Length: 257
Image 1 (cartoon, rainbow, N blue to C red):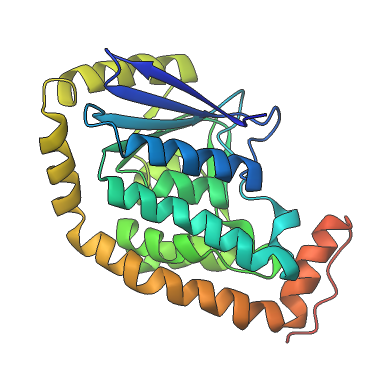
Image 2 (cartoon, rainbow, N blue to C red; image 1 turned 180 degrees about the vertical axis):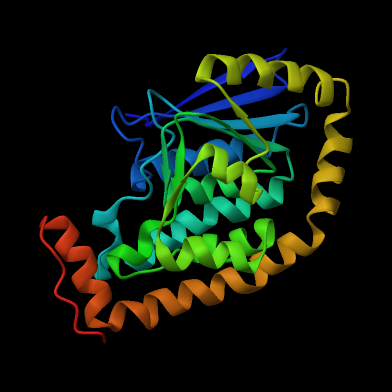
């Protein structure tokens, strides 16, 4: 059973992806496989002008599956997860994230890879991986690229979640709306004004060229951070303890190594 829904809007020029696992829209192996298949399909669609991402229900996404972060699963999980980022970059189709409720960990990373992020006032965003004794490879690059090192480090080192208002002040999101319904209405107006009148092929060139440096950094360094995660981090006691303690619903016993 698929964990994403897809709708085509505005004469099939806009693809609306809805993450939907019935609860927190966790990015597990099933949902990631669904996203891979859909992105492969988009590569054959020359008429697509925009891809939007959102979560079903009250939340965007609680993040990637913690169960799949365990040492024996980490390599396969990261390979699949990071593959989604490479495919989005290679497509060069403009992307937008619509954020409500919790947008955490891998969920925020998926939103950050998008060209534009909109949020409503219910949303909170953060990279809490450090609380579990690990780190987020994509966000470790995406946040500095988007908001600068100082503010990125604030989120990556503390694991703090920030409100939509603070996220806008930090430069993470473009606009904040009163509620999800208003966000939907305003996004549709934005699409009609800025996306629909343009050529799909020209939009892809604009997206690709505007991300020349962005894509270079991601392609060069994300594989290195993936290797650091799998081959160094997951060999430490504390990374495994952080993941296992979360799954066992207990406080971690750190040994600082």
